[in-house]
Length: 208
Image 1 (cartoon, rainbow, N blue to C red):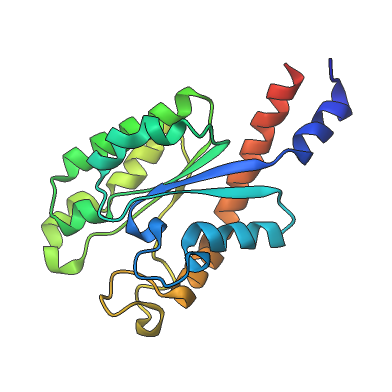
Image 2 (image 1 turned 90 degrees about the vertical axis):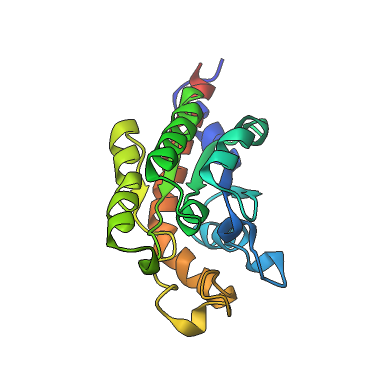
């Protein structure tokens, strides 16, 4: 049986496996090299900070929150130590009722938490062309889920890229490699906190 410092050292040395669970923004749509994708660039950035991590690619282009909910169990079979949930963008593009999106996101986060796995919610904002009414109903749902579940929220996944034309692909929806780099730089502090929570959970598991 491991005790005290020994168990903590074992947990510190253990690889933290983070599932990036999302849509095309996670999958790396339009990028020529998967090394430029969000999971790959975030893994590189976390390792540069000294973290022993691997990012698991769980992105599916075109996926909605309903699609994510339906494939969640399959993705969790990888037994990740932490999960970043990046879904909802396609719901907005299709003008899906935000009540449906918030129900799916709530269910996804709660299911992940059932295993004691830390979750980071990556928020999204509705495109302005959908109108003020839709945006007013859609944009707050990520904070709502975070409040209800206690999961931390990174307010806007595309922050740092979407308003800078030369960081986006020609469709103005998906970031190019430099855009992904900008996104990673903004979300990195939140990702480091997620890693810390996963390490705590691993340490508790070792003690048991």
